Length: 310
Image 1 (cartoon, helix red, strand yellow):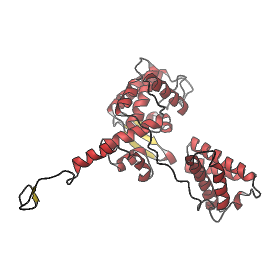
Image 2 (tube, helix red, strand yellow):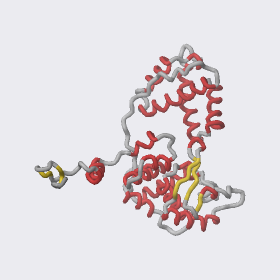
Image 3 (cartoon, rainbow, N blue to C red):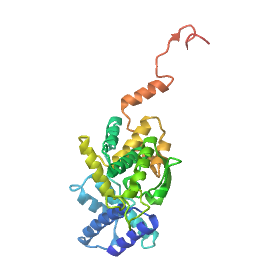
Image 4 (cartoon, rainbow, N blue to C red):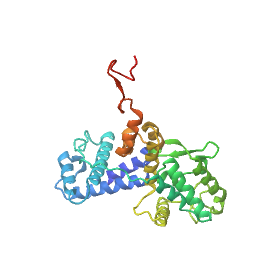
């Protein structure tokens, strides 16, 4: 089974253009399934049945969460779909296996005040503070994923047009506006960025580490942890939290879901609908302001018409 898994992972990388962390996740999930299969009487991956897959998932219920089980099932489905498409199997045995029902989770996001406080956190003078502010502002302004941010090259940012070209999942490109405060922060960082660049490093990378190399996802997360501690935010957030915050604040500001979908680079609108978690008070406020039948109107009994005129 290991050989088939390697072929599938190579397909994800070379054909699908999947991100490195995605490929690693598939590798981990499929290797765990392969190890479990080795303990069965018939470990042949091409002879797997839906019942076999259900048994494997059932063995995980007391060990991992429903969300993790759903992810593992998704990896198995994708693996066997690849085997079907490559002619090694006639049918996908995971197709008829249902994913466990998930509890609805509201994505973590910052309030406007918390977001503004985080933007003010890199208040020290210096090259790294300028870089950190530019990264935080761009994450909040444009809703980039961490991998998209650290993968930016200088040619991806148009200062004149205030746009950033983003290479998202599946190597799909999208253009996203850059807000004015983020644009100012980026300009100030780029003006001093050359001091970080050293001979032999990637001269195209926008965000550099202190040694002049391209900044990594891990370094970005460490930077955010430092500023979370600084502003005494009593909960953990990640770069993805700023992506959720970007979408939430757009929605609360009146942006439509279709526009938010395009800005985030979601393949389907259903993925974007996770952000429709505005509070009931906010929904009632919008309803009362917008719906013509939301408020009581004076009725003229003679004409049975609002306002007494015909």
